[in-house]
Length: 118
Image (cartoon, rainbow, N blue to C red; front, side):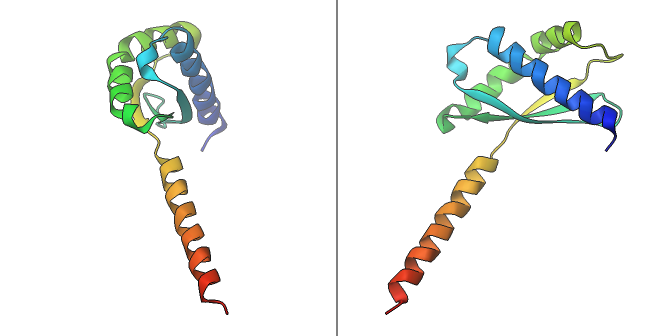
């Protein structure tokens, strides 16, 4: 991956975080963290992964973010200097759920191993 793409991803992540924090100050969104941004090689599509603290609010948060894409793109256009502002696509990052599930399984294995030892 090129240095330019990494730099654009980092810039988009930082700017969209600020836009969500200061411009989309909707209490219904809950606690959101942008975990990762991936940009296509032609810089036309940005895939944004968000982590939502409250699991039951994930779908509503994703719908709110997707409904706000035009406003977020226009704010982003005023903050970054690229020829094209990428199309934004939001996805829920469920990596922490996977880590939690693995952690529970490991603890269960260790618990079962301790029971079997005399």
